[in-house]
Image (cartoon, rainbow, N blue to C red; front, side):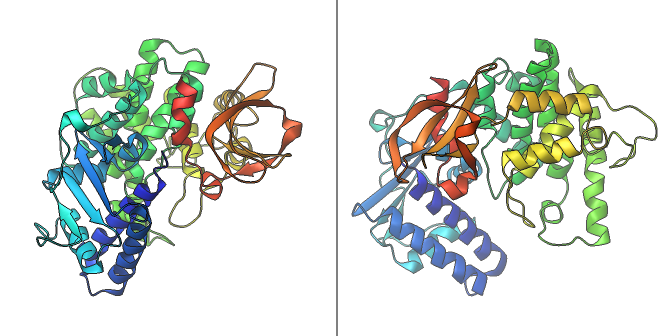
Length: 431
């Protein structure tokens, strides 16, 4: 099932609600966002006279079908809808702009309910459990969702318990490197810090496994990596995600978040507190003594060195307010250039060996014109992947497995440019 129309609708709904909450409906930015919501709603309802979205047990359903990828990518919005008493949203074909504006207001918590009898209706047809057709949810997806909810809870002021965090990341330990690296491609434009933190945890865990760390070490590494940006969660997110240049005060706040995160972790109880605090404090330090905070001759913790590389890789390959995402190949080049100065040379070498010439989750254009998503490689052998678009650019209903050599590759393609979400293919990799 193609979940793109629902994802586009939810993205537009969240953006419109945000603009209305900040500026009111009459502001130009709100009107523009509502126009985008109307367009997305038109696409979503184009094939049926009526579309029903149901929220149940942290998951989103289109009709009776669970949208597992969309539920994870929009985990925060789904939770907000449920917390506001929204069990289902019914949209008729081409819903009225005023009704969409009312929906966005309710979703953002600005209004309490919708007028009765409009083209958008709430809680009219929520599905019963027996009517739903859930798809199997992998342990990795459940762990990813639990990790997001833990971080979101800390942002709401919940108490940090290290034992609970280590118990959550246990679901990542032992997962296949290819599946872990693909899961680390999940992005969310509204909750950047949360998704980034989980992705860094997955990357660090995969790196640690490749470097021979034992199970207990991997749990502590993954938990510390999950909390490495806790200072961002606690500080003002607006300054940390601002497009363009920062003021001196904003830059000072950015430089403060490692200390804030470390202090919050040290105030917690449970195993791994010291390791997690060191990671939070040192993930922006550099091997040459630069970075922040300056280490003044003190050596970085070995796990901090791993997380620093994972943090940089995910940041480089993610879109930011001031720049677009870069390809995995560009990220590896930047890491290679910083080896020994910004980053630990041994860790960079291990990471590059793990990722190979074509990192799992990356999109490649082959000489035939086909588009392939990399899933792994054999030691000393060809890379393996899934053909997702044929030479004529058509999306395949079922991806086809293929092996290929470097000489067959024309270049890297960003997922957004390819119109393919790697998460759509995680089931094929895990099976």
